Amino acid sequence: MLKRFLIFSTLVLFAVQIAVASDRGDDATRTRKAAQVFKEIMDTPDKGIPHDLLESAKCIAIIPGDVKFAFIFGGNYGRGVATCRTSNGWSAPMFVAIEGGSVGYQIGGSSTDLIMLFMNEHALHSLLSDKFKLGADASVAAGPVGRKAAASTDLKLNAEILSYSRSKGIFAGVSLDGAVVQADKSGDQAAYGDNVDRHEILDGKVPVPESAMGLIQELRDYGK
Image 1: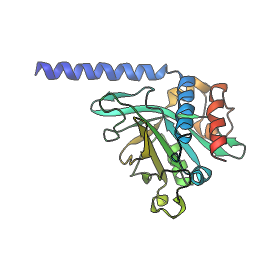
Image 2: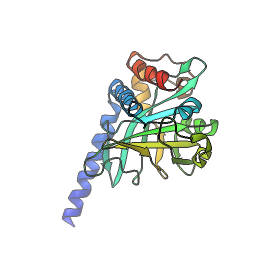
Image 3: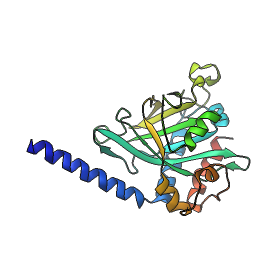
């Protein structure tokens, strides 16, 4: 009983530390890591996300596996960024968090990068909500891999969100069914101020910060 109590107390303390740290998180570092993850994945020969999917995606979310990841009560938690297409190009990044015990961000100390493509207006509205569950509030499927994959005929394209993961150098579509995505309001406030509105961020009404220019340029280069 004492052993269980000590384990539980340690997990509670660790979870609180993660929550506090997330309020003081370095948004610039998170955004740069997201740009790095996207570039590395898209530069992999004969791999990456099909270009036609990038061209038709409304938004993209990137969760770097080595930024703010931790076990929390048997589940997993990660923080990243999301950006959407506007009439003037990709928007400034909105900060997001994702959690779910079945996602497996870290198994045996190995972190996993995640990418999600939001393919239609309903998926976009889900992203703008405070919290939504993949598979319940928005349909999700493992995305096809390969720059020239025949994605247009794939039944997976019926999904509102296509998801991918990279772990130990292996990039593949992954099912994130059951994971919960939510707005990281503390991240938005740290980057843009207390009065920021995430609708305005993703609508392109908030200027892209200098720290996010690299990410936006990578998306422009590969998602034209």
